[in-house]
Image (tube, rainbow, N blue to C red; front, side, top):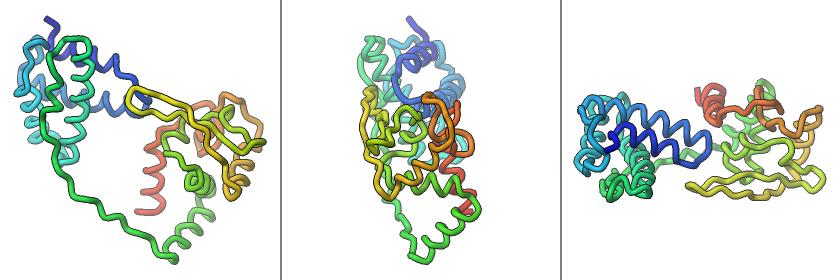
Length: 231
């Protein structure tokens, strides 16, 4: 007769994913708990939780969480589904109720394409005023990798002699290692970045987007882009 709240904490502890994804799930769960307490179902035995309880949680969040949107609805539905998948595997619930709730249909996002003049302006601005960020962007665009994958990259994963690097790719609970080529255009940037003496255990992109002991959150890249370009 595990209480609802304790069951969700247990589910979170069993999820296998990247650190960034785990941070998001922990944040999602903190809001889900607020809804559960507000609905006074925190002591409901997990075996008695039904589809209506999951729906009530989403309904409460839609009324009380700031900046709520259809996209937020889908994000929290997905988080609940992730937790209920674990609970179903451990036979604490009979089914994944969150999956029975219909996702919100979202409008397709219009992506603005930069003109050549706009692209050159951004290129020049970053090169002149934010060189380390400019260098990262040059590497990123030629890497065929996601920002989160590059943030996990360590010096030992880069082989300049063979012009390749190894990334860890997460797909759900599964993780695999992929080899990616360092293109001829990007090679000088990798070379200069790793020119300084650094430990094989260092992260390639740490503070200041230079090699260092501590990884940085991938969201910092989005934040830098917003501060230096979009703003």
